Structures are given as C-alpha cells and as structure tokens.
Length: 127
Image (cartoon, rainbow, N blue to C red):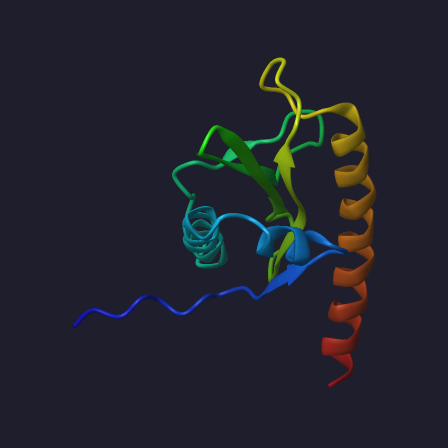
C-alpha cells in the first residue's frame, strides 16, 4: 500500500479563515483539503491559480458546489510554512473576480502571516 508523502511544511490559518472554511460544504472541504496538502508537500494543486495583484506566491483555490462558488486563498511565499489567508463564499454574481473588499482583507492577512512567520522563525532559531 502506497502512503501519502508527509507534508514538508506545516499549515497555519490566519484569523477566521479556518472557521469560515469549516462552514464550506463537506465536498469542498475535502477537495480543498487535499489541494492544501499538495501545497504542503511542494506540489502545485490542480485548481490553484495565482491571485492577481498580490505578487507571486499567493494562490487561490476555486470550487463550485450547488450553484455557489467557494474560495480559499493561501500563500507559499515562506520556505517552511503554508498560510491560509482567507476562505469565503463568493457572493457577487457579476464576473469572476474577487471583490475589492476581499482582496484588501487578504492583503492585510498576508501582512499578519509575514509577521507570524518572522516570529516563528525567530523562535525556531532560539531552540
């Protein structure tokens, strides 16, 4: 029996991203969960797309279920961790772009992730 590779990088959730993700339909949670696992093992998930306007290493997963669209945004900018920045159900019926308010929230959470990562790396070096 083949075993799945062990994740190389831990997964961290910023702010309410985990709680919001937990409210997704189970099928979307399973789909995104596997794709986040792939990101942790250094692979590129099949539905992952670069999120425009935030630079490299910020990626979104998009899944449709029962007429709704769900998104989770994460970053792989950090060598030893993956951070989920935001998970949400897209409410806008016009276009496929993420609303500006969502993008602004993701930008703020990316700054939180950067500070958290810096703190974690500092703590790791102390040990």
